[in-house]
Image (cartoon, rainbow, N blue to C red):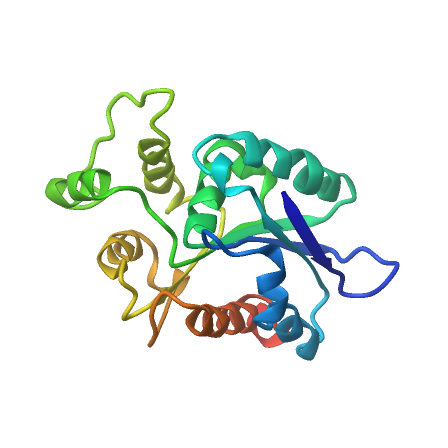
Length: 218
């Protein structure tokens, strides 16, 4: 598991930390290269960042999530830090998998163009008429996709903030719209762009402005 940290200030612990997981085949260092840490610095936000890239070969099991919990999230919470967990594409899916098991450990979710499972599960939800009408039924122990959507169905009206960022021209836009329709409008940010870093950087800047600038808090 690759971990790259960017502290708000050397030698101190910020009250809020954002942990971000990248898209498939991306590295933790890509967040730094694409200006994610710089966007926080230029806004002078008191946010510690942790960019975490699990090994891709473990993407379909829970090993990276337990590593993430033990190495990053539990220690941060022990210091009184509020942890936002986020991810891009496959990283967004892993963030949802984590929240489905440990939502009480998180201060919020930040999802950019998240992978939302195969067309089989999303088509099933579409045929049902959306999440309001969908009934997940019994969830097998290894059916992580159904577990994630069951969690979304419960959490979309719960207390945990969910921030969803999307590109209009993203190649997975149809599946994204299914999730967007289930969330409150203020939780969804849609910009022009595809499934790429320039779009995700724009969504990141919007997320920081909406959630963490003083005016947003006021």
